[in-house]
Length: 195
Image 1 (tube, rainbow, N blue to C red):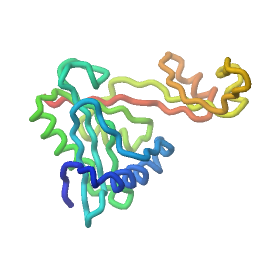
Image 2 (cartoon, one colour):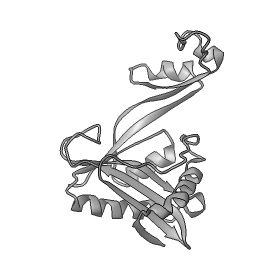
Image 3 (cartoon, rainbow, N blue to C red):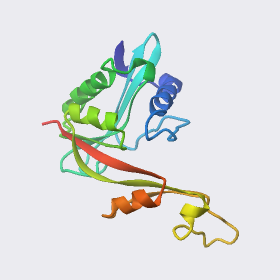
Image 4 (cartoon, one colour):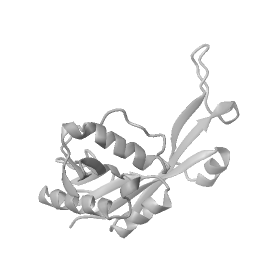
């Protein structure tokens, strides 16, 4: 297996790997049709086996404090995507991608990495084993159907009827949100110091 810089010709393989990797996670419906491009510099790596993209890691990083990351001081990098093709999991690919990305990040004088993910226990365990600490969280709330929408979401535009919505809940009563709506995920911020 080779870990190398992402190239534009990798886009279809990158997209396929990400979709398949996310299918059994809380991000199962977060499908992209094209790879994101970042406003700031980025570290974009892929793991390649038999000419197939089997892992990926994208980090957008700061050259000015506070432009990309939501916490901390100094220059940081935000992990936007990390994924391993399901057929290649448990082979250390994510850890190898992270190790290479950390080497590049340190060379670029970043002092920390930040990652936001949802409440998949196995994903959170991987972050913790990789030296990250949970530092913050809020809720992703999906509100669907007339019963859930009633009393919460309505349109002021005539003849426009919302059928579903996605919302961030940053309040204190997370249990009430979890009881009120069928699909609620905790969105967790992990941070790792590089110094």
